[in-house]
Length: 263
Image 1 (cartoon, rainbow, N blue to C red):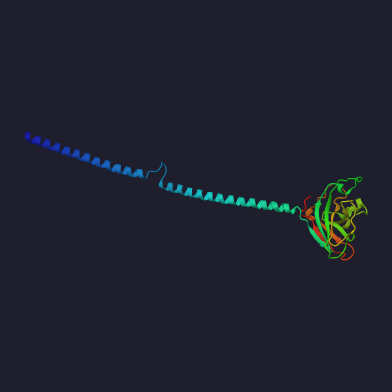
Image 2 (image 1 turned 60 degrees about the vertical axis):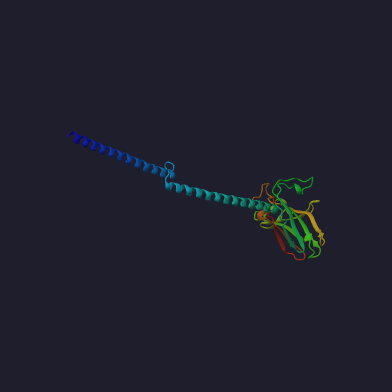
């Protein structure tokens, strides 16, 4: 009996040893598998909070940023083009300050050299004359005989100013019958004398073929009743009219706009 008991105990001990060895082997296999999985996760590891879909969005944002940069470069080019256009415009404006407008009438060519708007009559009075403040228009001319009509008699021409701001019927109240600086022609039209800068006297001589007369001008009072500026008269709405008042081609006229001339 005692021998059988020892055999049973030995059998149980062997079974327990086999079970222990099996358990250790299974644990060892599990550890190996876990290590392999851990190694696999390390190759595709992402920052905390970032998923595979988030990574794709980040890539798209980078592409958009590149496109925006390209748009900015295009805007810069447009800005440069605008600067060039502005420079060109400034050059045109400078040129238009001296238009030298010209018109031909009955064999005579008239060119406006200057058209200024002084606030006193100082340029048409002698040293003993009375200086009067006001609103005036001074137009300097050159007159050239083109030869189309032989001699030109300047006494046959009338020099007039037309503007919707002129009240022609008010000139007689101040100047009476003297129309040196303005006389009635029509509702918005007055005439004045052609004067010489050398002596401030009316010009009424003859011009030879090919002769060019310079330093002559007309002087208009734009507001004969007050010394205030006539707001209704501007360079843009005013024209100088040369009218053939007698002789061959009488009744004909030409109009030269004053727009573009600086004050």
